[in-house]
Image (cartoon, rainbow, N blue to C red; front, side):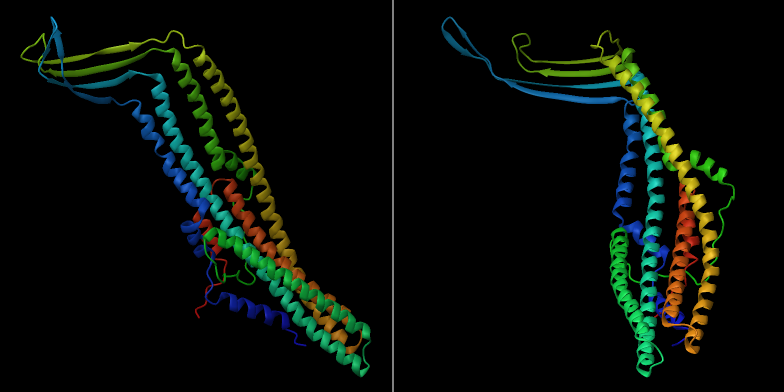
Length: 444
């Protein structure tokens, strides 16, 4: 049995995976171009940005032009004698202009349009952060499944050798049939676990493919012995404070509260008068008529100020005001809920990073101990002071420790990204830093 069997198998798997492998940053770029959720958020941003010019339209003049063309034919009858009058045409147009001078509802709608743009931008920024988290989570889920499969395959190979050794020892009479049965049971279990881990890997790859729109291929893995950093700043209160103020969900909800306040004012404006500057030019060219046998052309111009005072609208305005007030109360409650959720998310991620770092350190020590235990059991088995089951248990403990160590590193990295997302500071540069923890791609 080779003493470096596990390292050789895992190293071979990792080398094959890194040949022509793509890294986290490349996967993220594919997601930017192909992810359906992100594309939807981008379209929502483009639609939201149109709310500003729509609101501004209520403050700008409205110009209209109407025209008409009429052809008439008059038939008259006098003293029983039918007479025919000639046909005649008439045409005309009206050019009108209306410029709001005082319309509080229009002004509030304009301000709400600007708020809608800011809300769309905050929601899009949130979607960008969500994409980073979804890509990173799917990426490390694949790596976790790959590690599990590599561990099971390495374990199966080691058990195969142990099973063969147990059979040989039984044939020569230096071991009992129990060792053979134990090794056979472990081998059968490893085969079953291999099918399960292969299926899980395919599921994880399909989840990543859903984000980037195509198969990802082989992925770059973490560098061996990579060192992870603690959160900076190291005080949880600062992260929580940032989450309560800068989290994009909180920012968007704050804007929604302000929008609800302006909605109250806009509805109350239904009780106020409106003042408009109006101007018009009318032109009418009439053909022959009894009043103007030779036809006539009339042009008139008018300019003035128009005031409209609402007196009674069936209590509809009052009802809409009460509705807007209730919706403002709802938006304030939603803001408090979003703020608390963001703060709790920051706390959980902060604790997750620190606990993960401690777990990684402990598992690194456990890996060394498990390796030593395996070597000792192998030596003891060779000299006859240990039995086959002791070696198999030591092997399983080492594989389990290495798999747990890899997952602890992935979870710690993800909690670091979630912490920054909760604080509203997660950027592509953070993903670039994580990408620097991966092994460099090897050329075929």
